[in-house]
Image 1 (cartoon, rainbow, N blue to C red):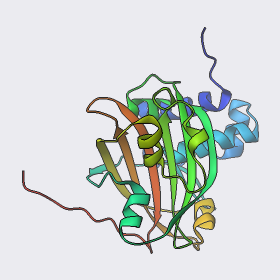
Image 2: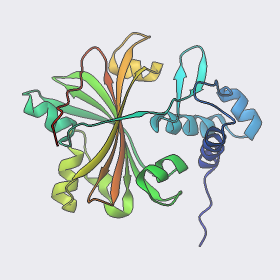
Image 3: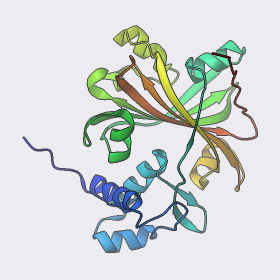
Length: 238
């Protein structure tokens, strides 16, 4: 039976196609939300969902008071695989989380390509605010291939470690990743959740995590406060 794409997914794909064809170039200003509603004859709620997901996927970004813009391509970097909870706990900090949204969504072309799965595949989406010693530090957007961890959202609670749930419940160890890092300005909604004035700098880390050398399971974006977090990496000779 053929799956019919929701309207918001159709809008996402239209914008992604314009970006990939060069009709919209990195840094170009996109039509406003109102203009998108009128052009595609879609409701405010439908267009807002498409915009929010494209921002979460790093495809576009918003500048408060100015509009939506196409994102630049990212550059690769290396980082650790222990996860935010493990990283902060190892440093002696108390880590807590606040779930902002968890739902099942379908994979856009961008996410599908990153995870090497068919466009329209079912994903588990998790959006969380991460706190260290009760201070908001980062926002995490995770997209997981749902067929590899069916029902995972039922196991994720306020202070759950996603990686621990994958390990304990699904016997999945993440053993390989690809990472990109960028500095960017916070969206107003992000700044509000992180308790930051606008404009505010964020360090955004994008990861693709695998369960083996070929099978990707998670695409994530972690937006850290630029005034509270630095990234450390270690180079080794090979």
